[in-house]
Length: 634
Ligand SMILES: Cc1ncc(C[n+]2csc(CCOP(=O)(O)OP(=O)(O)O)c2C)c(N)n1
Image (cartoon, rainbow, N blue to C red; front, side):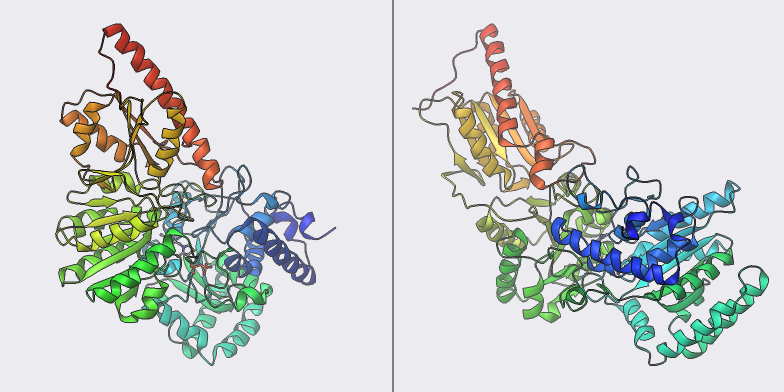
C-alpha cells in the first residue's frame, strides 16, 4: 500500500515524518504523470507545487482555514491530499473529477473560477468577513503564481489588502518564472532579479538557520521575522517592492524544501496580518521531460500549442501572411503566444507582437492606443478570457470606433476544462457593442478570407471567432445571398420549408441536418452568414419564402446570433416562426466537446428532430388555416 492511498484528508498528513513526506511527494509525482498522460491536464504546474501543497495542508487547517488557488490549474495535488486519490483517474472525464477546484467535489474547494488573478480579491473578502463575523481563528490562504500576479486584479487586491492591516491573510507567491511561457514584464524582471541573485543561496541558508530558531507564537515571533525580513532586505533589494506596499514579506524560500516552506508558513500564519510568502519553485519539478520542455514545461498535456490542422494553426498561418503584406498589423497576446497560434508571427516579426502578461483588460486598451496611433492590432485571445475586458472593448475600442480585430479562439464549447472555459458568452456580449462586426468562419479557407476582411475594416472593431480543435473539411458556396454563402438549396421536388442559418462551423452541421430533414421530405436551404453581426438584411427576404427559419450557433442562446436574426425578422415584419438552437444559458460541465454538445441538444440528429416536429406543427396549423401549399423546387 502506498502512503498516498492512506491519505484520506489533510489530517493524515500531519503525523508523517520528513522521510515519509519525501516518499509521499514522489508517489504524488508518479500519479500526476501517469494520470495526466492518460487523461490530459495541467502537469508542469502541479509537479511544481507538490512540496508546497503538502506544506500548506500540514500548516493550515482546511476547511476551517480557507485555501484559494489562483486559476486553480495547480490544485491536483490538493485534490490528491483531500480524499480524491481514488477518483483521480477520472480527472477531466465526463462525470469525473474536474480539472480545477470544485465545490461539489469537496469541502476543501472554495473557488472554481479558473480565470487568473482573482485569488487575492477572494482572500481579501473572506478575511474581512471572518473578522466582521467574529471568527478570528480562521486564516485565509491564497496561492498565486508569478504569472497570475501580472494580472491587474491581483494588484488592485494588494492595494486593498495592504490597508486591511489585521486581516489574517497569507499570500503565497509561487514563483517559477513561467506563465505558459517565461513570465515577462516589469514585475517578472523584479522577481527574476531575486531568483538569479548570486546571493540567493546565501539567503536560503540564512532562512534555514534563522527560521527554525524563531519561537512559534507571540510577540517575539514578530521580532524574529522582522529581523529575518530585514536580513533578506539587506542582501536582496527587489523584494522591497512588496514591503513598500505595506505588506509583510517572507522569502524567497526554496519551494521544494518542504520543511523550509512549512516553517515559513507557520510563521506567516502567526502574524495575524497580511503577509506574502515568496516561494521559488521549478515548473515540472522532478520530471526531466517537463523541466526541460522548452515551450511551456508541459504546462498542459497534450500541449496547448497550435497543432497542425487546428483552427489556431490556420489562424497563425494566415496571420503570418498578413504580417508580411501589412506592416501596420501588430499582434497582442495575454500570456498565450503559443496556444493562440501567434508563435510564427512572433518569430517573423518579434517587434510587432506584444505579450502583455495575464492582462486582458490592458491588452484591449493598449490595442486601442495602438490603433489610435495608426496601427491595426489583432488581439488573439481565448473567447472566455475576453469576458474580463468587456468594458475596455465597449468603451475604449468601440466608442472610439477603432480598427482592432479580436481573434477569439476556443469560441463555443471547449470541452475538458469545463464551465469556466467554455467560450459561450462572446457571441452575445459582442452583439451589444455598437459598430462591432463579428465573423464566424465555417472552415479553414473562410478563416483566411474573413481574417483578411476583418483587418481591412478601418472604421471600427471586428471579431473573428472559431472553436477549439481541428478544422473540418472545406465546403464551397453554391450561391450568394447578399454577403452570405448559400451552401445548399432544397433537393429537387422538395419545398422551401426551412431556412437554416448556421453560424461558423455550425453551417456544416446545417448540411447534415438538411440531409436528415430531406429524408423526411422537408426541403432546407442552408446558409452560412459569414458575418453574424451585423445580420445581413438579405435574410429577411429569404425568410419570407420559407415556412420556418432555424438558426444554429455554438454560443449561449440568450442574446446571440439567433436572437439577432429573430430581431431582424421582427423589424422587417417577417411573420415566419424562428427557432434558435444554441447552448443553454447555463454553466456547462466538463466533457469532450462532442459530449457537451450532445448534452446541450446540439447534434445534427437532435436539431433535425426538433425541426421536423416544428415543421409538422406548422403544417397542421397551416392546414387548419387553409394556407396555400408551399412552393416546390423543380
Ligand atoms: C484571465 C486568464 N487569462 C489566461 C488564462 C490562461 N492561463 C492559465 S494558467 C496560465 C499561466 C499561469 O501562470 P502562473 O500563475 O505563473 O502559474 P504556473 O502555471 O506557472 O504555476 C494562463 C495564462 C487564465 N486562466 N485566465
